[in-house]
Image 1 (cartoon, rainbow, N blue to C red):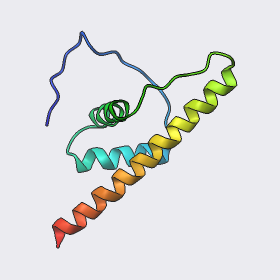
Image 2 (image 1 turned 90 degrees about the vertical axis):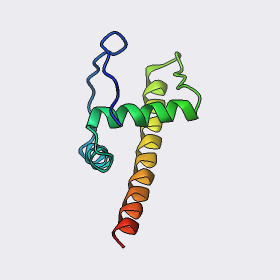
Image 3 (image 1 turned 180 degrees about the vertical axis):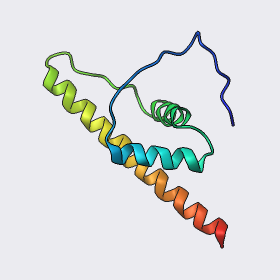
Length: 95
């Protein structure tokens, strides 16, 4: 399923990801027959639809960083679970 491209509602953002996480995202993208960006958009959209928005404390930068790292760990765990489900589904189809 291809997403309609519109320029007025998108902004480019650059950030660093650990290689292991990026490999998982690429595997997920390949299994969905889509690209990395679309896969990340869908994962993030799904995450924010299912949970309340991330509220960062304003008191100190350290707490914010810890919360962000914690949220990234949660996302990594969810990606691992998705990857495991995809592998199981692929194995079942091959049988």
